[in-house]
Structure formats: structure tokens, C-alpha cells
Length: 260
Image 1 (cartoon, rainbow, N blue to C red):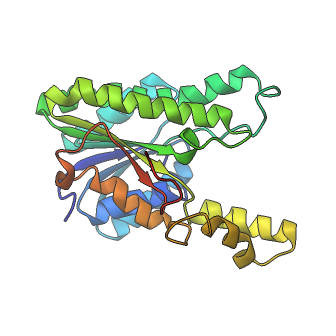
Image 2 (tube, rainbow, N blue to C red):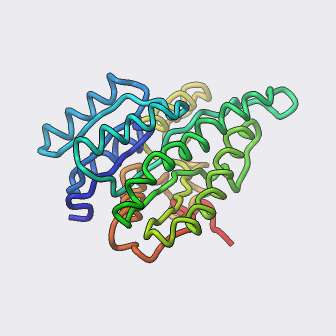
Image 3 (tube, rainbow, N blue to C red):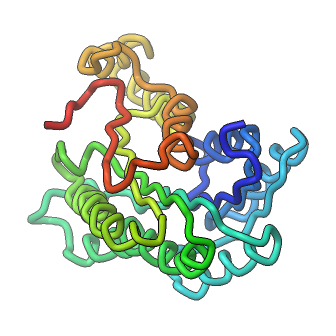
């Protein structure tokens, strides 16, 4: 198993890739600690994992609150004894307003959750990882960080800041054998995008296949990447197969964007 007996915290667990990462991590042998603001959704994923024979702890957490981040890590250590991996996938949605119309407070709010939420979680797990002289952190970023779209400035800048933090912390944490990487996601074929495509098709009076076609045509592999397949890539960066990989941002978007 890829993550046998590792203790992995996943923030921002939602109905898309967050849920897939949680289920796959448990199936690969990890003891999974789930964090999100929605207690009801956490409980549903928690039940899925346990019904499949996995081990899980779910803790409603707002990463905008440093105290809640510390509590999450404390409960994880009390339950499982260590912290081996952290996936930061909590984020705040873009305002979808042009710069002239968007209040700068929206940039601050997005940075506070998307970037500083991850930093709060990293600060919370760092003592445990330093003590055991090992750990792997993956920050989930987005194509918007390098391929901006109108109206996504607050979200794009926060994701770009998170990529910069990834490189900085990889350098600082290397002596403690703690790795820090990012995965840069594009379109993810899962429940959120499926709902968007359905609504888009209805609004334009076309089929869902016709709504998907122009998106898929921009992707080298010709499909919107399934969120489950993208989740597997995140988990590989937590595993021992990537013990010599740190400070990198890996594009996980089916070839929609190629890094220089």
C-alpha cells in the first residue's frame, strides 16, 4: 500500500477532489484526518471510510483560525500518535469581479484562507514533523496562478503566493527531512465541474458534450482530468516514492498547461 500506516491530514475536504483524496488515502493504508467547515459532510466521508474498513478522524475546522488548526493537529496526534503528511486543499472562491470593481478586502480574504490557511496548518504540524525528522506537505494550487483569467485575481494571487511559500519552506525544512511540494490543478472532472457543465449546457441550449468539447480541446490528453486520477498524484507526493522531491510545483492538468 502506498501510504501504509501513515497519518495524513487533509484540509478543505469537499465533494470534489477532497473527498477522493480522503477515500484513496484510506484505501492506500493511511490513517486519515479530515478537516473542513461542514461537519455534516465530514461525517458522511468519515462514514464512507470506516464502512470500507479504514481508519479516520474528522474534525470540523476553519483554517482561518489558528487556534482551530492547532486543535486539529492536537486531536490527530492524540488519536494516531504522529503526523506524516499534510494536504492543504482549503481555499476561498474567487469574487469573479474585475480589479476595478473588486474591493481589495476580497484579495485579503482570499489570501487569508487560500494561502495563510495553509501556512497556519503547516505551522501547526511542524513541531511534530521536526520531532520525528520526517514529513511531507502538499499544497494544492491552481492553473490560475500562472494562467490568469478575468475576475479571478484574488484567487489567482493567493494560489501564486502559495506556490512561492512552497519553495521557501522546502528550503527551510529540508534539514529536518520535511518535504514541501505543490500540485497545480486545472479542470477537475468531478461533482463541482459536472454541475457547472450541466448548468452551462442548459444556459446555452446545448448538450453537455457540446459544452465540454471546447474545454477538452485545449487539453493535450483530450479530456477533463478526472478528479480521482488527480487525487492519486497528490498522494504520490506524500509517499516514499517521492522522498527526493521537494520544492516543486507539479502540473496536474492533462496537458492544458506546460511549465517552462
